[in-house]
Length: 203
Image (cartoon, rainbow, N blue to C red; front, side, top):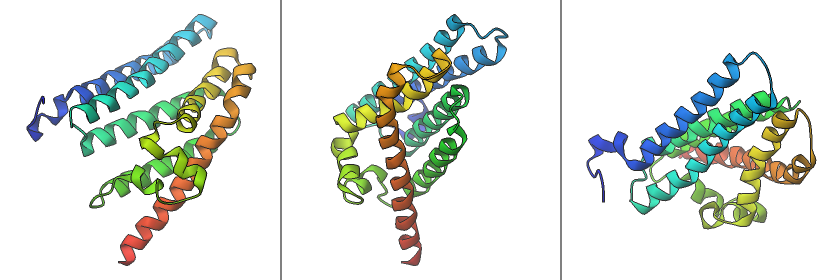
């Protein structure tokens, strides 16, 4: 086991991967903002940096579980990077509902943060016991299942395909059902977390 003392939480391998994700995302944002010509090669480069950052997210979570380094700081760092990534991708996608989806995802993200600070508040476990069948299936096996994988990949593929091709293409339509499931799950998460926190406050 590496880096056991809590003073070294900022240097956990999974945390270092989080920093790498942030650097890749910063590179994508900078490239997008500083490039004056919107060429296909530039769009592909920006999409590649974001895609690599999201792939590292899988390694980040795996290492945290494997090394027993799941920390509140790591959870919040990971969530912050995810939300920033989602916001940027939606912003460049040109999708007409992008602003609404950004608001929904950030609002739910803030409730996840609040829930995480509750004693024993592992937010994902809440959804394996609450909500409709499809939501429990979505969060089953810690989201290591086909429905969750398809929905999360679609959540990236749909907006990034709109950005890359400047409009909908076949892969956008393949990803659309997964996006609907992802956003429906996000909306249910918001409702369940809101009720859970309200119940906790009354108690």
